[in-house]
Length: 76
Image (cartoon, rainbow, N blue to C red; front, side, top):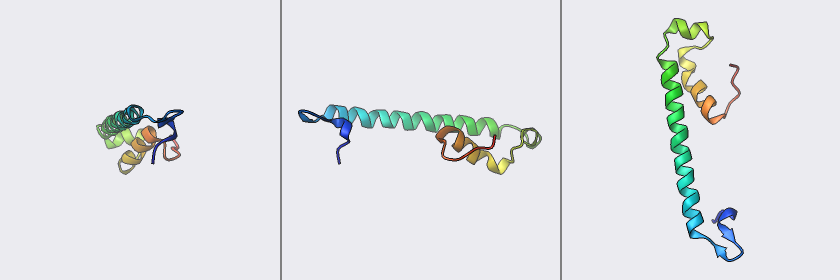
């Protein structure tokens, strides 16, 4: 199914469709890199450092995911 953005008065625009797919892939890649960087930064902290900022080691994945993708409500 064609995205409405890909349809002009002349019809379907395949160049725009490919551009939108490429931009979506780039954004997904950028977000996955940001998630990994956030996860790695928190994972490098000691258990004591994590406790100081109120984070349990088991919560690192959720916190990194929420920080990048915004799918949850973070209490931080």
